[in-house]
Image (tube, rainbow, N blue to C red; front, side):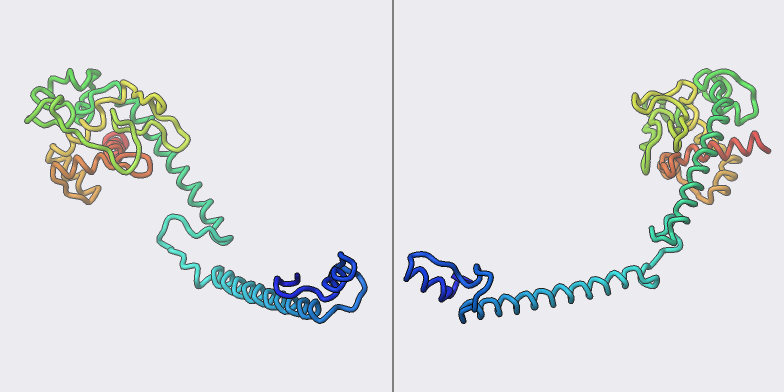
Length: 260
């Protein structure tokens, strides 16, 4: 059967005469019967139709690709940190990545330098320009009757609600980064361990500055934010680019006290 409809006349005649036979299409040289000729014409027409559809689809695809790569249709957002990954944007992406890595390294170095000083000192006495080697818990000048964490007189440290970090990762015990970019800062990330010198530094320092009217004015002027107590707790726990806002306050205070 050819095309599932009509049987080759040569095949039908041979089967009738000899009990077996071949169709026109299976023979190399012969005159095709009308059935096989019609079948081949239909097949040729079908192939032409398919080829035309393929060519049309290829033309549409080429037009879509050209439109996609058209500079006016890329819609690059100039305000975004990363440009589109076109050939023109690759160099810019590399430059931004290098700049970000450089910032992470420089910030990590500042944190390490700062903590070499603060790690062995009471942070509230450091702000007050008192050279005290005692721990925050043993500070008799400022801390009696206050929460060690948020400096409040309304509750003890065991009743302090503290804060919940959001927006990224940092050491949940001290609020400082354990790793910044490729630079190790402190503790063990895999084990979740903190370094003893880093604990009781960020929160007590941030809250001491906020509760001091003189420092609070300078703090709010620098960061251009006026916080309520609840807002300040949320803000210092927000993590961006690998460090919490509380660490940003620490670095700002470090520059104000040590570098001026």
